[in-house]
Length: 200
Image 1 (cartoon, helix red, strand yellow):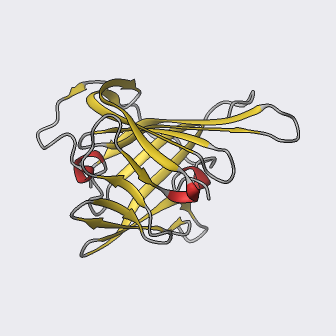
Image 2 (cartoon, rainbow, N blue to C red):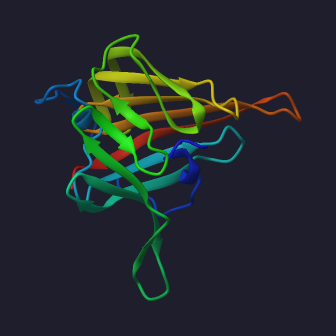
């Protein structure tokens, strides 16, 4: 099973305006799962998505489209239809629990406390998530973010390795997916870097 965000990243969507880079210091517990992925109603993440080919990066836009108690729904924004109504792809469900954030459909964890270097948990697609860094600094178009956490997932059925950098009070800032093609024996990679973030 593909990472919930990566399955819909390669979309051609309307460009957004530039944001002035700045250093962001977290004000909450930087290692709390809900700080590392703040799913507030109306929150939006815009990514530059590079699929490793000769084509320029495309845009992937993801939004929290529903909040119901501890449940969250995130979907990709597909732009406006002919009637001028914003449309979305199929939403991905998450549940906020005392121990972390769970992917509803699979029942597996996206992020699980305590977050510390070497911590592991079962995640989607049969992969195992492992925390490899808890104090990383990220520089992307959206800005410079400190105290970020890097989570690497591997060991799944499809051989995919997914590395996600979560930054406090922002969410996934860099998402990288690498998979070996059995037909060509070449690596297929996708990399998404945060262009802008609106907390909602």
